Image (cartoon, rainbow, N blue to C red; front, side):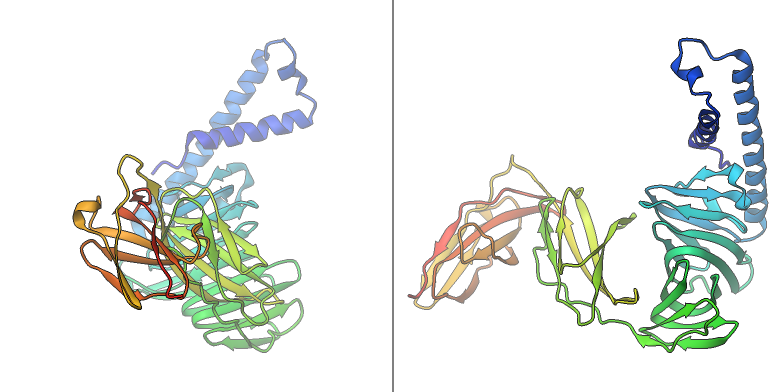
Length: 415
């Protein structure tokens, strides 16, 4: 299994160039003189050495894969993330999807870096930006039901789901400079900085151990551990916000809103696709503008964060980002008004698909909306409002494609 890639050579040569630039060799590149042959041979020898050393790590990895399931797989990576095989800075590799991680490998993410690891036991670890993690132990033998995983969180933020699969009984431990967390079938968060450890559990149970004491964290509780202090008394995590009703699909832009949570200092909004995290951002408002998203299906997750930094329970909502096919006309709506009632219907012959997204609004600019997906040929009836109601529709061609809106119809109010 070859782990040596072109980008790895580029990374190594770039590091060499940076060090040479620091030694005032930049003039070799900026002047009109050709790089001398000795320097070229120096680069060639160094790059050959790098390839040989990385190949040695690849052989070591192959030995482990053949005899054990003692590897983690990078399922998703975004932004800047670096792998240091054997914790050796000279072997730095750009993290790439599908790359294997073994014992003693170190992972460092940049300020825009995110990396998701999966293990043969079914455990998943998501490493957030500005984090440094060392893989201490992966002991998941092929013909055993026991799997032991030990990660050392030196700094940063990680989230883990340690649900066991494939018949494994997973023993998962996170070590930090202040305490260790022994996990039992759990979804939990670890946040480590220069002064403290935060551990929070949203599913299952975690035992947090330091030299000065042990705390058992039940579901939806968190604890803080500072240097030379025992774990603090567990505190409840904040409740999940309620994501307010919004459209089932967006035209690449829109707004996601949620209810406020008492005692929340800010909120963490994350967008995910089947491939992994798209982005994650802390905001102080109870809404977030969705912009420049690619066409596809997304899951939004919102969590309240308290003043100590503990992340609360998670609210989720799925939505689609669609493209508009302007070559297909929008549907024509038919209205029927009877005293205090009215109905809206889309004849199949007046629509390009058998499903239509309807918008109802008290204003013609549709700034405030109610949304409803209906089938063609099936009328929708409701009470008339006091004032005029505007209705428009667009045909749903697929999960990611719609027509433009058809003509707007007005439903007179009862006043």
